[in-house]
Length: 290
Image 1 (cartoon, rainbow, N blue to C red):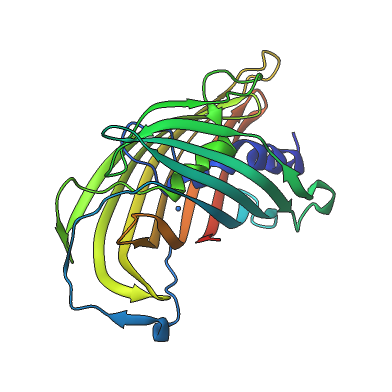
Image 2 (tube, rainbow, N blue to C red):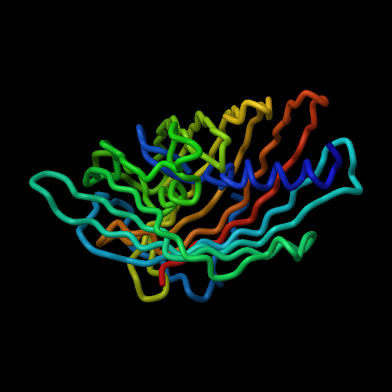
């Protein structure tokens, strides 16, 4: 298996490792060196305490990723990929929770290293449903599992959880920290990807940004990753880990995400009948509401 084919396999299989960013406890998953908005857009707030909550509503987001894959024992061989995915989310009020629906509206990608593999405006009908609490906890998650991989949710649909936040069930003050843990299973083609994710949050500031009252929150993520391939003729497994950090801005009235900027790095070793191949993936991610 040559380096080019290995890199393509890594991109297809681990494109979902970028789901390191966000998802609340017991949900199917979801990266960061943060970049802050221009300083002149930020106005200090006298408030230093906030009671997080979610409210019903709909919104649309775009997630833009720029990733680089490096074959660790061959520094001359790298692959780069830019992707843009548009999502629609809705929260419908129930008695004491929300019905959560998220849909992948479109996907596009551009590979600088392999222009022939680039694709634009790829329509998608991937949808997930769940019960959503007022503090961002997910339960009863259901997705459209690919026919080639029935054990998990499609990787693209799973990324909607980077668009939701998990908050404590109490008032929080600037400087407060909280943690949640995620167990996630997703599919990339016939590859099943399992992630164990720990996410640590800190409320940095309550401020006004782009004419909205927001909470500025830092999130640091660590993850352990394992993968297997269901094709009987392709005995492929993988193990690895990842870390990420991002800064995101949550609307203090609605709880909605307004913008996020982050960076993550994942290290993965692909094991095949031909040997073991270590890879490193670095990703810069920008998310904004549309």
